[in-house]
Amino acid sequence: MDKVYLYHPMNESQPPDQYSDCIASYNTWSTIPDASKKEIYCSGMYYTVEELGQIINKLRHKGTITVTGYDIIEIARHITTGYLLPNEARQLLSHDEQLYACLEIVEFFQQKQLKIEMKRISNYKFIVKAQRP
Image 1 (cartoon, rainbow, N blue to C red):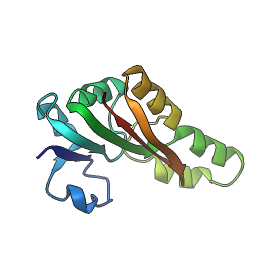
Image 2 (spheres, rainbow, N blue to C red):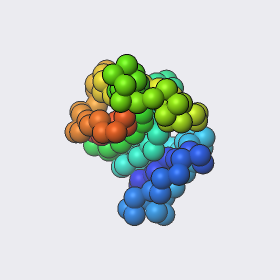
Image 3 (cartoon, rainbow, N blue to C red):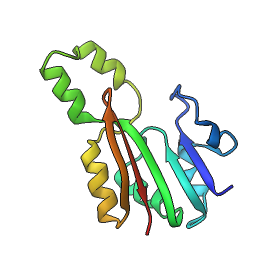
């Protein structure tokens, strides 16, 4: 397969249909050969930026990577304005996911010379899609 859906066992979301036959655990990404994937979908930011850089190396030229995660700035903003209670925030953040701001991921992708195709934040979660040149 030329695409892969990286997930965490604690992540309850189901992969999109187009990834149903190409699922890999978040901790097995290092076994994927470099420059072998046309499309990578990282469900949740369970990676350091260094690991994310290595995951980018798994993309072919013109391949795309999509990353989702909780946006730490949005969570903090909603706590300080009273829209999110600390107890609710703890529930959001009670797993192994790394905390980044959407803009941090965008800047990291741009440093790696990736072209940003999409960036969105909704309900404390971000999604960023980028293409390798």
